Length: 162
Image 1: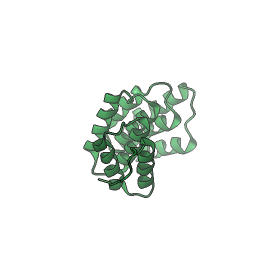
Image 2: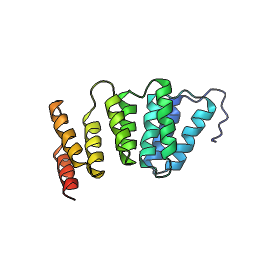
Image 3: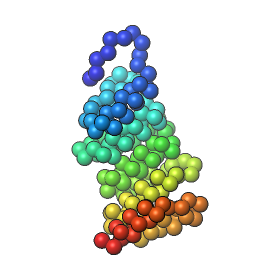
């Protein structure tokens, strides 16, 4: 646990910045430790800190169970449908190859999923060998008024030909 000696509690934003900095520097285990410190100190976790740690779990190979715990925490706090948390959940499950969970996270996002969410879902299906679903997502994306980038369309096509 990180030690600090100030009388005032450290705001969640400062913790979130520390998680983001560790993630950016490739210090995934340290970012996870910071998040655990937040929880053990009783610091309220909002959509900002949850979405930040989900990005870490998306890249971490050994923390699948903890990512699911963060998902449960998001549900408990009522932020699992938040655009940023939902996107984080989608990316995390997609990178772990848990396509059904990624699709559920996508469907749960309140409002209009952004291009990154649509792309992540299409790519998850393509990399998971579910080419029809990947193509279907691209068409649904277009029907929702968003244009897939040429790079995404090419990546889905390439994955489908493998």
